[in-house]
Length: 93
Image (tube, rainbow, N blue to C red):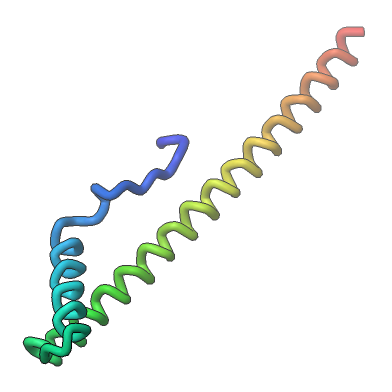
């Protein structure tokens, strides 16, 4: 089991990037006063991007929580090791 949880750009496939590019193209066209190619498709793409952003934020929060829990466990382990060391040294005296 790895020590750290790492998310990279490689965790997101190229389809996600294609969705973002399509949405950006549509937003640029609309901002320039051009009609959207397909309003339903545009809205669907926008919804997909929003869902991906929420999923990404959820994964980042999960990573932060896992990192925090790992640190808490490491701290507790350190405390237990110190207690065991103290007990063993007292028994040797």
